[in-house]
Length: 198
Image (tube, rainbow, N blue to C red):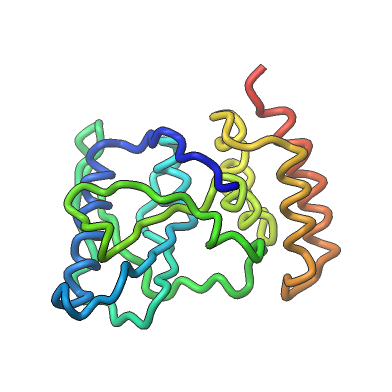
């Protein structure tokens, strides 16, 4: 059973910039008749985290496009945050999910979101579920990965037991040193327990 979409908490101006990039990707798909069914794009990384929690504004969009896709050259948008600071959001054409920890069902379980101005019959925009987003941060598990997992826990979007279960299910297909990841799982479980709402 797929998780329900939680309310998005992104900075409104960030979300406008994000939506503009998604619109440009949809336009790059060509004429409506050229697209048979929607092309799915799944957002990961800091962009997904910010959309879910409103924390850590990411300047790039990590995403997997589930189709052969030649990205156009205009996938960056300038925007201003709540303090009036100029920011830039861009689509990362170099994103690669091969070396991260990812559950085999992560893309199937990704959560569809509505993006203003984007025709979901042509471009189906999804976010990695909060749980899979947290799992994807375990293979590296550096400072900002830990902060991201804690932010998801504080928002009540993940729990420690589910994180451990999902991460352990993902381990058999991981390319890399699983001993290090197992340590990260242990540490992240404790972090989530500490960070969860009381």
